[in-house]
Image (spheres, rainbow, N blue to C red):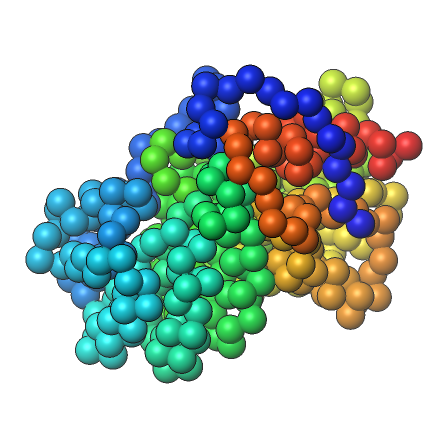
Length: 333
């Protein structure tokens, strides 16, 4: 059950364009673009492709370093995916970038038929996932994980921060088969270096332990979960955080093992619709394992979301630090 607390609108400096980094938070500039340059040096088969959004997905950094290996396909996402599939069939390894809404909703059939059915080495790196823009439903990819999870053989990643974004790019450069990665752009928060973190494809990682609450999260919501854990620790509430960067294939063994531990409230937190994402994937895994903890779900509602400033929207839809912490206190009774 997804519960949110309606919050009063907050004053902000921008109504539309905002970073997911909090004020004063450590960040790393364009980690995807810089990581791809490093992998491009190691592997001459890597090419960068985009649909008129190189600057807005940080692919322009790769384009500047390797102009002969950069393809600008124009505002035609179907063509981007079809061409990426063709490049892969010729032995190249395309990293194709656009916004998540355009990659999934506009080009889904091309990904499904041209790339996935052929099991081609195309990496779709999609910016503005979930509720990371205030431009409204046309740009809010709140259902992208559900769509990509449904494609047979598709690896699906939702990295948390700049460090993990770099590590995911390196992992995908060595991976066989199609992959979809949610992408944070620009100045991306840097968090996981404090936890001596190393991404492993298909593996969930326990970042911190706690006896009262277990938050299972991915992407942006792992950052939120760690912030919530720090805030609730002031009230002597111990919060464990299990980070699930690989949505598919899901690390069922680790998730089930953590949920078997008695006495903890389990909260699944995701920057995605309540339909078809991490929550449903984990719910099915727990049901099949006959593990039934006290369970709550923090996710976006099954409706078209409002336009506005990100802090206000995150409060409104229950994925902000303050609202999430307040809800967990309520659920604990």
